[in-house]
Image (cartoon, rainbow, N blue to C red; front, side, top):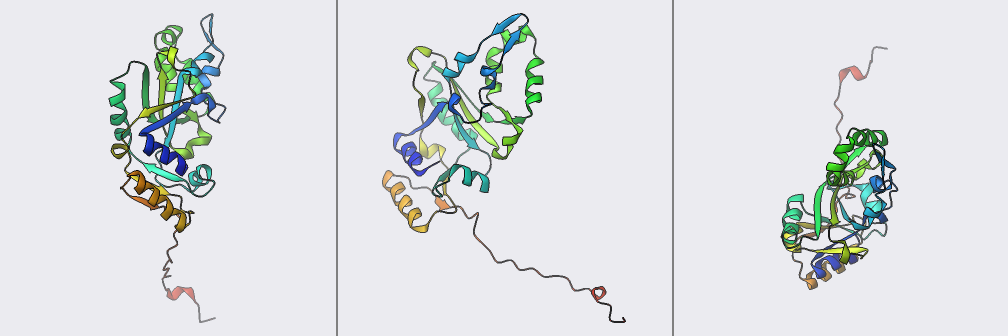
Length: 235
């Protein structure tokens, strides 16, 4: 994320989730865009996209590709946490509200045909009886072309729709209970890094905030084994 997003998270003590219908991959929300027929009954699920929000994380500790994709200005930051810490922090909010359902989990990467086969294995009765489960599972499936992201998602589905027409939802958290470490883009300048660290301290963040060492160069020492067979001096 950008440093401005990190500041907002720390100052507001919240994680921002946006409607998943705005995610760039055209296959996101595929179930709600699909032509679905159970028996002879057609189902139009398009409207359900209005009530689903998400936040994307990764299970990869370090990745050149992700820095270049999500930190194109070379001064982004990475937040380290765990699924357990996120779940425990958010659980406090779940218990106080019947307005939404939240799921946290890893994304599974499949071919389009594998996704179709999975859902077509359910009967008409299964679809009607387990619709909520199928909706949830569909939000954790993605095409194999994206498996380099090793994505982890927070997915929120609004149950009480009358009061939720916002494009984003902010879920209250306690940052010190969620964030283990903050890492800066490996390409950030030392001057900008120090400026950002000073801003974090003014906000009240006192934990580790380091620069990624992905591009640190350590001179290698390479020694080839000597072999008498390498040279034939008889010729």
